[in-house]
Length: 432
Image 1 (tube, rainbow, N blue to C red):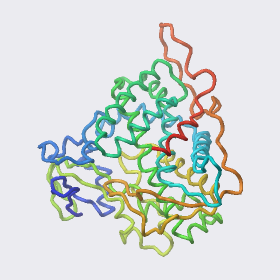
Image 2: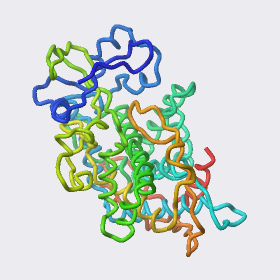
Image 3: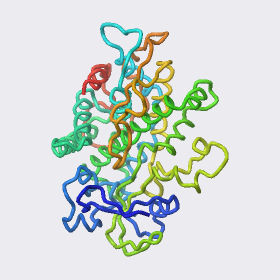
Image 4: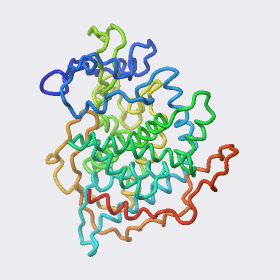
């Protein structure tokens, strides 16, 4: 345990939890001592916090993220049941198609040179998870463009963050209302289906909050996980050769990164609901705990075996634990693994464009990655594919059953004809 502050004045404070056992104790919360409800944060409630980019990200919202007990179960139910309907095999095809289109955008329009350069973070890792999640939600191209812009601005923490957050709320509400009128083979439509079956259904605001949360969390640490795995492979020749030769699966290389360069360094947002102790520290009601996932890789109790535990040990807490653990780690793993496999297959010979020591890093309040990851690569032996046309055959969810109603409704579900190709969306993003 270590008492810390998150900014210079010392007002934004908490306890950094470094020990794996204490981290698990807080996350599992079997003693019902800890909560995700930020209204318990004493300094926040007393107005003692300074202006800080993290404040909007911990401010209370009426969503599963800040709920506990039966209310958390109610708010989580439609979204979790909808996520369970995803066909992961068909979703992999979607991810591959998007990844191919992003890689095709690395090459200049006037023709590739002998060596080409791209920023893997900005042109690939930041985009792929977000594009996948927006497509799973059933967004059309125009909505995805606007939503992507709002999310980028909100998470940047700049002067436009509050306006972008408000814009995102409006867009999520519009998406929820649209899918209620015209359901299709997407997550939001299935959320409506399961919500209608509940004794205490979610209202439109609560559904919108869960859609917002799924998109942002789906982007979450996945982009940093892609970026940090690429960096580890390009700076660890032994691991890279093992992956290329098939002696190590890509997923094992990803698991190693969870230990040596955790994509999400800190989970900020657990508050004590009563006076307690943790380690040798007395914790007062309203104190904040920060789960330091980055410290786990340095814990001698976790890394004390003779074999490469960072490849085989999956006891890291990147997915959280307890009721607030990630509901679909398989989907996040699929997005990252597929994105990495396509990248490695399409761009053999890729290497860092600058020395590792010269990379600049973001402040790791939560996630930690370089501010940019420039790479160079020779023109591949086969031209990058442009991706399949995005037509109705890309089905990763079935249509939900139509709601029973005596009112006359328009014919269903799936948009007629060809869906948007989204090529302009993929081409636009690297210019942001």
